[in-house]
Image (cartoon, rainbow, N blue to C red; front, side, top):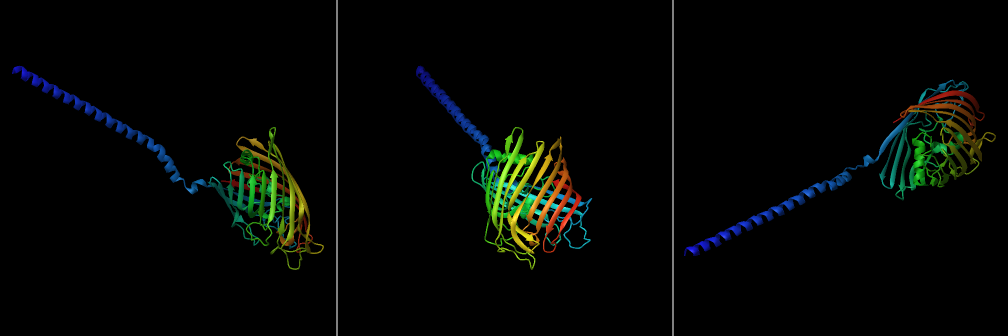
Length: 439
């Protein structure tokens, strides 16, 4: 009996021990599974921030973060060492000289805000570039200055990832003439030449333009401006477009669009960069209020022939530079012999010599320019007739990126005639100075 009880107790103890062992194994397995779950959660938490910042960045990218703002202002004084106040250039600078018919008329050569501009621009979409430039120093013919007026408002629509093919829609510069396309904030001489600039008032009009340039050449165009070589900006290797032909900020006065084309390429030759180019446009000019009573136009007043072709050659200043252009064509011009406006041949151009003197953080640009023009200006009174022979010598000093000074001595010989001033050749000299602020 005792043996039987011992056996039974032994079996019961073994069973209890087995149960305890099984419980311990089950407990360990449960703990292992829980640890695996916790590790999986921790891994998910660590990985989660890698996804969230991208989503948050996309949500926080606002339209105004894609648009940059810059600008510049030019303040001039044209009253130094002037020998003849009747030497003037209406298109160039309204504070230079006077067109008054009074015998003893004097110009108001005081301080003058020539330009005060802001530029809003940005790549608002991978295929859409935006550019808006108002001028706060526009000077209408009323004699009151500093009106706000749109200079540029356009959109570039690109068709490839490198943006080599673009269509520009809006009001912008017409691709005709290197100096016309060159920004006034970059140009050495205080005013553009009469010969090329007489083609398009304010260099701008409303239209649609196609531009093409390889991405490498687009970078070169940008470098020529950014690094102080006085480039014209990026208007493509090839340009073609149509525009109203009635100057910017003015409604079209006929239904005949002007057509323009330009080819230009900046070659690297040794340590130099040269850029030859050729451009042309054709269209019909429509007179509105420019013609005086009693002055006939010997053509259809709404469809006056306006055609030009021009050649460009630029040797960028590394350190010595040459910039020259010449154009020929047909356009309206006042004829004092008949007191009428005829369509005549026009021709003219300029040569600019310059030197880029790098003084560390400062830059000096000595320059000299000669210009000649024999033709009319269709947008001035009676398509005013011009014969211009001007010499300019000067220097631009950039002590800071935000500040530039230009001094320019002008030896002028300008004949400009209309029905009010039919015999008007003016010769004279003056010293012109300008301070430019970049921001």
